[in-house]
Image (cartoon, helix red, strand yellow):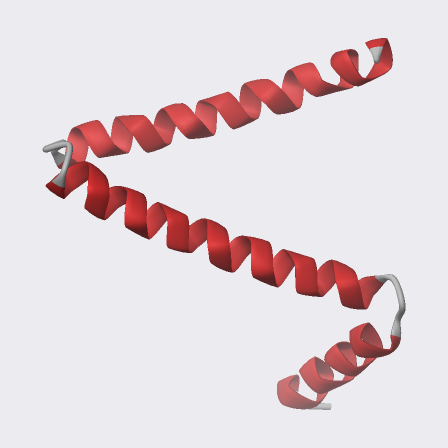
Length: 81
């Protein structure tokens, strides 16, 4: 079975499944929107805020570090709530 056939089989399986279909659609919409937001942020930061490449990279890196910190704190926070 070729890769295209396997991909088609997997897509058909997801399309038929009542839990996977909305999960996939949500992931596609979220990720597309998120990457569009990043593209707009970079243009805004460079043009309107006057940030250079290093400052933009630090801002995006700080965002990534915050996401990691949030993921580490979330289990304890969820158990308290």
